[in-house]
Image (cartoon, rainbow, N blue to C red; front, side):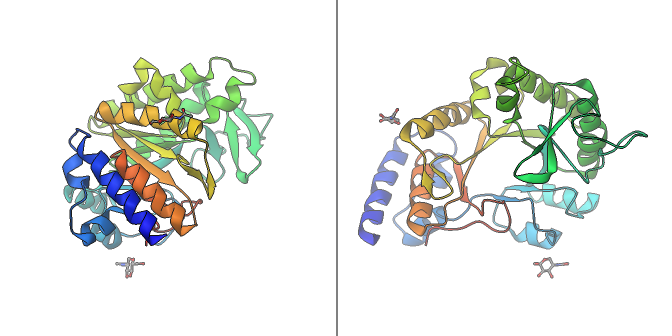
Amino acid sequence: MLLSFSLIVAVASSFTVSISGQDVEEMMPEEDDQQLIKMYTPAFLIDIRSTDINYSMLSKAPFTYIVIDPDLISLTVDELSDLRAEGKIILAYMSIGEAEMGRTYWNDGDEEWMPGVKPRFLERVNPHARDRYRVRFWMPEWQTLLKKYYLANVIRRGFSGVFLAGMDAYEYFEQRERPSAGADMISLVATLRGTSQTLNGDFLQFSNNAVDLYGSERYSGLIDGMVAENIWFEDDIRRTEAQTNFTVQFLRQARADGKTVLAADFPLNQAKVCEFYVKCTTEVFRCAVFDSRLNGAGRSCQ
Ligand SMILES: *[C@@H]1O[C@H](CO)[C@@H](O)[C@H](O)[C@H]1NC(C)=O
Ligand SMILES: *[C@@H]1O[C@H](CO)[C@@H](O)[C@H](O)[C@H]1NC(C)=O
């Protein structure tokens, strides 16, 4: 294993040299083994489960890009402002394709929500998570709640931007009641962009998955970065080459357009963790392996 791994590293570094772009210098491997090892550790953090994340921890973290759940973490406006001054980019998790019980928008108004009945945007429960419900995200009532209770709040608290989760909800609805769901999702991203820009012109938007939306010309101007998951592996299962290629083509395009590309896979198997880092850094994406629940620190290739 060790031998074939060094071979892959050698191949990866010779590929990297031929790639042009501003990220190359900081990511290019050097002779020094320490440098090589450094490349195969997480290059960003997504932790939307831990409740004990605090200022000093984030300030010391060796990452620029950090995604956290704003409702789990009690960072003050001053702390977020300090983190931004230190060069950190702190993104707030915000699901736009699912409604989550316990968020401030839940049960807005005078009547209790009854999924499947009211409000009319609330569809069925996510079979994998009892506290999350699909939403007909194109409906203005939902978009108003998101903007009023969620987006405006994270902007006021001083987050650098939002991480737009749940975007792949468009695929679900496209196959059912809403053939235009892809275009609708792009419109929602545009609406959120419009709102955030009026409150803070520097506020960032990062998409999560649904990478094929990047094929739409309009979309590229609405996001600053992309977070893609399950690119080479789905947990420990290898994706087919066609699946990987399909995703990677959009990420390459985004990178070429100057977007930040954060790539996350979730293998447990060490050889696969290492293979992920080799392939991902060859693409000059920012790369990290996490627990599949996005809980805790990432995993390195060891
Ligand atoms: C922040 O979290 C770290 C790690 O959990 C802990 O060691 C530290 O004491 C915490 N700092 C404060 C100020 O709470
Ligand atoms: C995937 O892309 C690579 C080049 O990046 C190419 O060599 C390979 O043939 C492609 N495979 C499929 C199944 O499309």
